Length: 283
Ligand SMILES: Cc1cc2nc3c(=O)[nH]c(=O)nc-3n(C[C@H](O)[C@H](O)[C@H](O)COP(=O)(O)OP(=O)(O)OC[C@H]3O[C@@H](n4cnc5c(N)ncnc54)[C@H](O)[C@@H]3O)c2cc1C
Ligand code: FES
Figure 1: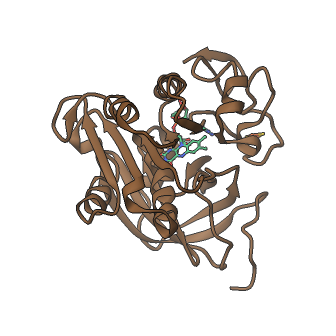
Figure 2: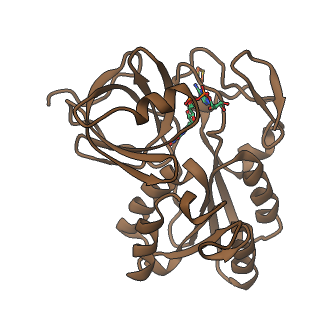
């Protein structure tokens, strides 16, 4: 354990030391790195190399000493190959990349997400719990069904211990209230009299809806959203695969987390994304 940073141009091999099914088609892995790296910030990401298959970006759910926690949803060949890995296998890691969430002190912290967006929100919750008051931390999570709620037990336990306020919902009503996270979010914003900051990670269409809700309330002093629903190749600003119009910002270095002022300048936000070919696709 001599080096202090993980290289960003070639993968560092890490050993899988734990693997468990987190929720339907989604797995949690703990990966031991051979170095004691500097702390990862919530919202940053890694590039995961599955040897012989592919390399792709993943959020960071936790990082302690030299142990990295990731959560990976089954999508296609890359994620399936990772999910097939077993304890003792090695995978490559580059990172930590990108701009993180930047918590503002003494406000209501409203974390809203779904799907693998809950990965950076888990690390953000851990970070907030170190110095913010529990009653000010609200997590809003939504999924199609109970089985697809990521980190359900973890957030529910924090809620039961009164460490966070967990507002949970499902489309089919199988856990929490039936509906979308925006329902409880709007209720909170209507009733609250103190300033709030929104931290959002999930499908971009959902984030755009939340952005428009947030803009209606002057008490929302900032919205920080992770545009992680984008194609990436290098992860550190060289290939421009992840650039957005009209600013040309590269999501991997200028984001993935952007604040209200920046999001207002990205016309692609919630409307278009780029495919692997560079072609633009309506979201
Ligand atoms: C910053 C960032 C953070 C992410 N965090 C997570 C996470 O914590 N957990 C998780 O499960 N997923 C995360 N993803 C998505 C993850 O990278 C893709 O699901 C993965 O690449 C799928 O690869 P595949 O071979 O399994 O699927 P494929 O069949 O190759 O692709 C399925 C879909 O995944 C997306 N995708 C594929 N390759 C890439 C790529 N190189 N970059 C971005 N998206 C791609 C595309 O939307 C594609 O349609 C993140 C993406 C980004 C950009
Ligand atoms: S992924 Fe290469 S510049 Fe962003």
